[in-house]
Length: 265
Image 1 (cartoon, helix red, strand yellow):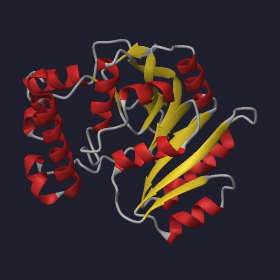
Image 2 (tube, rainbow, N blue to C red):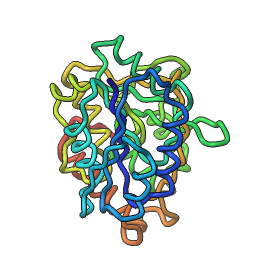
Image 3 (tube, helix red, strand yellow):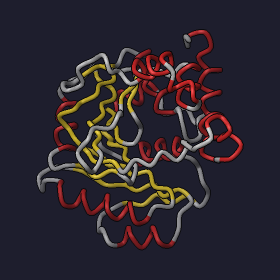
Image 4 (cartoon, rainbow, N blue to C red):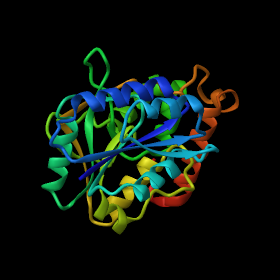
């Protein structure tokens, strides 16, 4: 069985769209369960859940963060494979079944992620090489527009590989990824020192370090309403002006402190 866990934070409208799409695209013979982890739960979200019979709700009064939300969903689910979704994901028909089938056929793969698309059909970047301090700087300052910055970001976004076939990658965007339960419990759940960001990077790294592969699987496609809330308009000044940016940089600092010299400029 496959568990589908949606990690929701104050997004009842998008959650309704996500749940509606799951109801529409999942085949009747595909054994699954759907869980919603509702962080900082609200009556509006609980009302949405009531519209979809059989959906399990894990409600948390406080903002426990994305990372703990993922961990709680894994502990509460029962599937051999767990698809972790943000509520702004709309899976295409057959995408979940295909991803589960692929993961089930490859015992050495711990994490797999679909191709993410914008709603105009263009491809989003959703698999990457590990962050370095220089990558962060290039993404958050005018340095990213220089020749050095462009070269750094191109490498980060794996532009040198053919991503039209299943590809081993260093990490996958946490908006949509499927994990093997057996692998997750061998590796360990997400590191809850990361509140909102970097836990997907760190977790993928843990899979690799424990002998499991992380794979981008483009034959499975999902649409993603991608609003990058940590990206502002003032470069490094956003750390003072944007709460999401502050969380991102704090979690990035935790990541670099955790891995120390293993991160190269």
